Amino acid sequence: MTRLPSLRGPLSPAAAWSSDSSQLDLWRVRLSSPRPEELSILSGDERDRAGRLHARGRSAFAASRLALRCVLGRYVSRAPQSLVFEYEAHGRPALKGAAGLDFNLSHSGDFAVIAVAERARAGVDLQKFDRARDHLQIAGRFFASAENDVLARLEGEAQVKAFYRTWACKEAYVKALGTSIAVLPSTAFCFDFTDAEVRLVQTAWTESFEDWQFGLLDAPDDYAGALCWSGVPSGFRAFDFEPGRSLDTLAAN
Image (tube, rainbow, N blue to C red; front, side, top):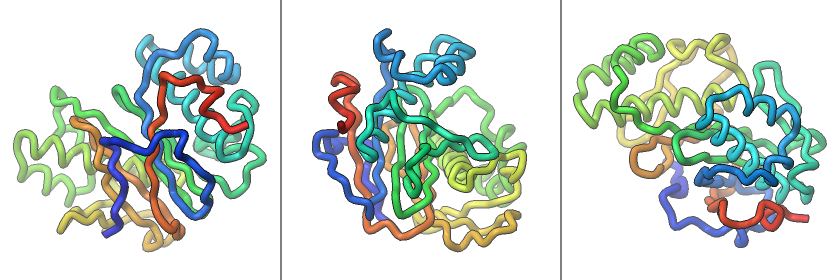
């Protein structure tokens, strides 16, 4: 089983980052409301998208996209505001003029996580627990039958953790593929967590899925996280995006 770095911390500081194209990097971001001057780093399209969200969602979206721009700026030695994103058919972003650099972003609650790789394709997902939800009802709509069977045998906190663990893996896989649940319904593929390993045991996706690997992230309390990747990274690193520092200082120039 691949050992992934913990997102609980302490993580390596941003200043410790150095270029290594063989690694798959994870960046943990503690979300905070962006300052007005920082919003100018976002593109007009990003500001428009943020503006269509409710207040909390607007702040989280803006903060996570600011962090994404800053982090990616280090890899391509460009200022965050100069980055231009292109989008695949189902909305997965790619960085214009940076062929071979793959990344993925997820945010939930007070955190975001960014995966960056040059020798892998990655999908990452983070889910904050919401214990007020009817997890069995939701799973009945979106989980495969074998996943529902496992969930139904659990109760209380064990059921909550299993639900979000499964949901995070499903989201990470769909995001790595660059598709959507409209194209690949989440009921059409199934995960098994036997012996603390994550295995995709069945999928309706026509492409081979044996090349994809999965791992659960040691996420902060009340969160579940998952990473999906293809390719052969030599290792994994985890860094802390420090919101108290200037975005311009964090970006490589």
